[in-house]
Length: 514
Image (cartoon, rainbow, N blue to C red; front, side, top):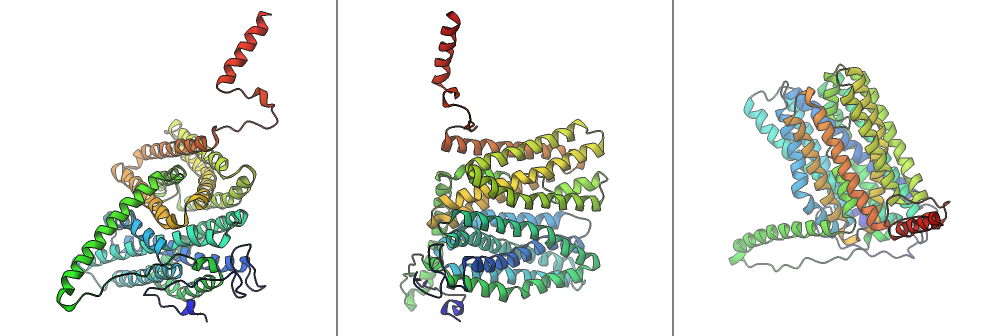
């Protein structure tokens, strides 16, 4: 086992500079590869690690809702506090996570994300098991446990962001190197894994919860602990075999050891300084994000999180209130995920033919069009529940092709144009805005909580998609100078824009006068 695989989790780890001539390493497409370690081999290990991380995250995310509903029946307040706490932590602390991703040793960053996620979930499952078993019945115990669970959920959320941003926005780009086609393939496969876990993770834990909530908690705990060794090993192997992952400027921390007489004042000053540095870093990250050339595709993608039209708890609750059975909801949700998975093939196919910028506009237009039709049918047949709900559901299902196709296009643009030094900061700032808009969507259904009022947040969701489309259209206009691509089969002289239209009009008048 190499030194990288034995490196301690805690502590400063200067990255070893790899060599392109190292016979045991595999780097970019241009580097030499052994028969044993090809880019395909490395990608498969990355996919397995990502699958385990995403699956555990999805299972716990959905399972925690079921556990809270069992422990606190008849009220949505604990669940709301839990969800708001998770979102708030991501909004406030994502910038610090991004700074650590950009400056820390890549292997150490991912290992920290794995361990923090697993420890937080393991402790949470232990608390949930105690509460579900009824071993803590007093209100004080329940309130205290809820507070601890909220804190642990914040840790799990931040560690999940750390892992996701590190792998999808940094490791994938570095491994693919200059091979744009390989980057598109890896992006699609990673998104495919996300969607499969999104479907089967909740399905699995839902079945376990149907048997017994205690069984569901134990399965959640077991899956969480069992995946640690494999994730840990595969990440270390990838890091060791790809020298480019170790090529990052590293600066040793310079701090003078304080004497015993002024140790306490020094520590207080150090804490104060670090808080100030953190706030200053957050300010600089915000400035960098809003001044970046790919702000518009990033922010337009984040704006899509302001929606209740996604087969999440809000829309599912509405559908059930309108007489839709749980089996029908499951069928619709499965069809939706099927369309989303289809987007992971349609996205790269369209990007290869017309480029990621134009493809993003096409997918965004498709999503907006489907939602406009669905919500229009919802309002048009509001008095006929079955037709109204069916139109809305069909529109949402087909819109998912545009949503995830757009997501792949915007992600590819961001990966290509965000500098290596800013990848973590930019991506976590984007994640913060995603959580802000997601929180706004929850607030909309808290304020308009009556199922009869669902049409208003649904309409607001369409307006958010329209705003996203406008922002991205502006980006396309900035890059290409036009939105509609004139067909190449038409002669150049017939393309009339701006001053040419005036010239053409004068020519017509001259022709008519003769």
